Length: 415
Image: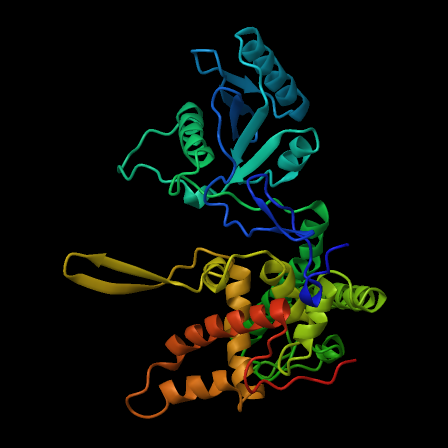
């Protein structure tokens, strides 16, 4: 009997090699792992451990080879094939020392190279992990020594602790498939284009303000035709160089608008072609909530809601919407948001929280916000909107994973 598909079409995610599998009847269920420690028993006698300190110019590879006293260290050109040959050479050294290798575990720090190397190694039978850079504790000395050799030794130390199943050494990043990475690109590109559109428009408005021209909207489509008729505060027309600059800026603005429209059109077509497959079902469900559009729904699903996070605390922590307490002795204070998670999700949620108050005034979350901010003794609205954003994220996460509609939230009719 085949396993039923997950509720609301949750997208499948790459399960890290450390994730354990339990069986309930005939259907295997993957336990959600926060990747803070390995769940696989570590046998140092039969495990070849490799870490790679990666840079643009070279890779420094360090290994812990069973049966070999020295800890080998080798600098390579950034070449995956050369890395694979080195790992095979160390494996043969362990076999000659009487230590047959049954497991090869490799790790490198997350950075500019992304996840391609991890996927490439996993496809060749090597257990690859990507270390979360911010999870590695470093010395707090004012001028600490930092070299590739010291960094490789530090990565080896924390990776061995992680393999032993001990918490606090480091955390791993879930390795996405190429399809999952590619699915995030349209939303991120659109955000970049929107920022570029705002930058061009603001620059033109600033130039007009310096000439005393107000009320002109350079982002309108007919703005180029009206440039010649503009008059400065001194009663003269715009200078020739300003006009030429504005025409170039408006041409760039038209191109940006066209590209944004193309991204939105392509996304709508993909949703229509496969409305109930993978994350598309999540997007369509979120877009039914009044106040949430396709763009926000797509961003939330691609960036956070399609991930297999352990619980609501993990969801809030990934978005960076958790607090950062500072307690020592009698001192107790709150330093504000941790801001250690996905900044794109955090920005979008705070904007969505303000919009949610406008379109879902009768919901339980909106009533909760008003009850705590109204009156002379109410809390600051800008502080409480962050709390509302966190509650809203958790409510939307439950909606797409369990189908539980938040109390009082109005939905559009299903298409």
